[in-house]
Length: 333
Image (cartoon, rainbow, N blue to C red; front, side):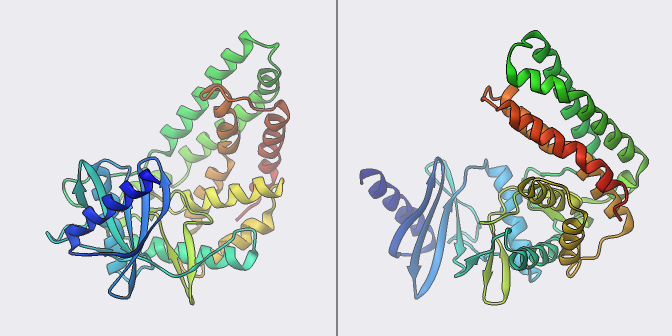
């Protein structure tokens, strides 16, 4: 109980910077540095968050949220402190005060919820365009860097191949060696396709012309309040093509289904395009990003980089899933 008492006192001290004396103060999340407190003040429910970012990174994401809110985007409002700042520094820690949105989670396994979430995401992308961060902010941008990322991931997989060849008696390594060559072939095709695509002309723009991607868009970070879909937890936003968010959503759905399915991809895009139409070039680049073996890489990274046991059967399963998508994607769009 001592920890809770200390955390509650910490929140009260921080809220002094807003001239707020909270009622019904509760800790609703406490995971390392990142902490959330919920409380009532003047008949309004609000949420205080302790950030895990450095100040320059927080300046980028917090001001992005303020910008989206001011454009009419559905994100929680951020309250300024007594010195008219959105970020409060206290004991070398950073805090932000948000409005609390009474809501329910949207579950991506439910097709209606997924469609609502995707419509919300498209509107989020549209309202995020035009954001210019403050000068002291550390800018997060992935624009024009996909090729570099693909090459880096491919090279790591080749390095891990060399490591696995030194211990072929390890069953997980043996499974990796069995599948890595066709996976590298898929990676090479994606790299080659990206080089020949409109990717560089689409990303060679002023950052303020590009949308912000959420990067962690899923159940828990998209909520329904009345008729409105709100996007929360913008700690990872970055300038990029909207395909970055869509690729992650589509990939997760395919992994969950255990197979790549063209109709599911088309339905996801149909829902998304209710709020933001994609050009043919944008669809082609999304297809290339779907082709790259991101999911195989994520699975085996645990084995090689994090030294976690990964069952040989899991490696085989994700490799088969990656290989099966090549024909499905070929005729897409």
